[in-house]
Image (cartoon, rainbow, N blue to C red; front, side, top):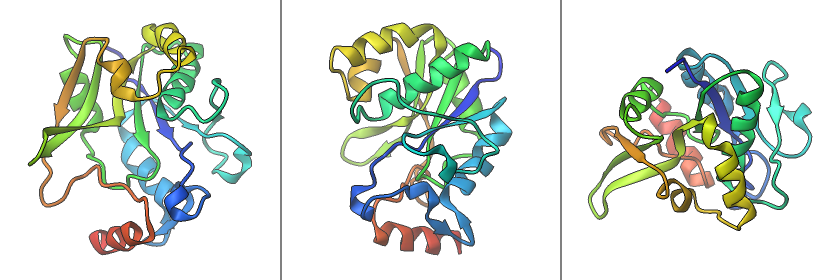
Length: 200
């Protein structure tokens, strides 16, 4: 498998933060998005941002692709936008990361690729005392070959990531959740304060 392209999902509506882009919040002197880019960029061949609205609000270093599905269709629409972009680049796979998750593992991509050796898709996961394994569906390895299948599912009204991935051969790449879950994401002002404390 060739090195995948990276797609940062920045299309959330951030209702619990009062709206706006969570990725543009400041954390430790730079944006949350900059932390995400710093972790993802060494692991992928190139990066694209998935976001709707005016792309000028982001760092112009990276291309921005909008959802091609009308309405707010959630992260699957962002995955599809990334797959469509990757197809124009001649890539076979993309890895997605959420723009509000600044501490995800620095070995995310190789471990997703390892998990996907005999599967179509791989999703990141961490141990969960209640559920056994908690999947993190905004962090995954996705084949470009499934983009038309995903487009059809979105047009049929599918919105939950695992509702679609469970139709395909999907593996879990398990990451440790100690000393804290690396897929912790910033949804509220309290989460931002916690992220500042973790960074310190």
